[in-house]
Amino acid sequence: MSGPNTDYDPVEVTPLQADEVAAAREAGIAAVLAARDLDELKQVRLEHAGDRSALALANREIGALPPQARKEAGQRIGQARGALAQALAERQAVLEVEHEERMLVEETVDVTLPTDRVPVGARHPITTGSELIADIFVAMGWEVAEGPVIEAEWLNFDALNLGPDHPARTMQDTFWTDPQDQGIVLRTHTSPVQARTMLTRTPPIYVVCPGRVFRTDEYDATHSPVFHQVEGLAIDEGISMAHLKGTLDHFATAMFGEGITTRFRPSYFPFTEPSAEVDLVCFVCRGSGLAVDGGQPCRTCRGEGWIEWGGCGVVNPRVLQACGVDSERYSGFAFGMGIDRTLMFRHGIEDLRALFEGDVRFTTAFGSDIS
Ligand code: DAH
Image 1 (cartoon, protein in one colour):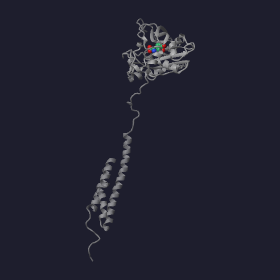
Image 2 (cartoon, helix red, strand yellow):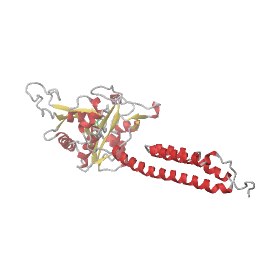
Image 3 (tube, protein in one colour):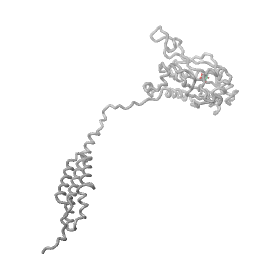
Image 4 (tube, helix red, strand yellow):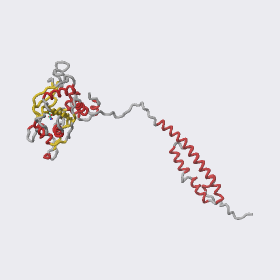
């Protein structure tokens, strides 16, 4: 007996038909196998198994089928999707292994290859030279003292017996900070550290003070508006010029070697009385004034046999008094040398500017070795 067919609606949506599903499945699997790397596989996954893929669309249509047709269509589509998912997973595993192996090969580092790394620099000879000088004095029981480079006029000049009208003020061409009447200068020498030390400590005092100083000098092979000095100050009972001479001879020998001593020439500094210029036995000709190869005058000392090194003297009692030291009980000596000049002699540097231009080839030539 036949009647109306209420079980089966022959109108099936196209993507749900068996051959359509089979075609989508085959196309998907073929694409999976053709994927050459993980990126391509990702595209394949989107296209053939993603939300908008033919199989996903078909899957969504199942609900619209009459109940009797759902099971068959559901199985067909489910199998197709399962087969595709499995193909994707297998290909994924294969491609991951391949990727891993390729990375190991491509990212291999040959540690034996020469490097093009930037060479390491070296500490600057002024730094290492200042430390060497400090070490020579620390070994004698002295201390290292420091002061600011922007200094009070009073400490840079007045406390050192260089009153406002003292003609020697003009010996040092000074950088004043604006406005000039506020009395702040870039220190013209390291001598204000003497005053600072006496004002803050009680004798006995034995300090050495390396540091940067400033003068309105030209910038050329022998001058620079910024340079370096080392100051020494000893205050104790019974200190005399003899202690000064012995100390500077030791300093010279420690810096330049055995047999290099000093001589004093009378001079004038407002902060010392008596005062002297210190000369060093020329360490190239060792005082002979003659070049090593005979007859010609020595180039380093220009035939003098001596090299000017710095200034020194017995501390003027007026300076002791200005800085609160009992000048009846204590006396002292002081000296000041140019560090840059000292290093130029010591290392045969012909142009002062080499010390300031920051060429790393220059500093590395010294390495970090200072001896
Ligand atoms: N301050 C002096 C200058 O820069 C150098 C100097 C000379 C320092 C004699 C001293 C000294 O301590 O006693 O020219």
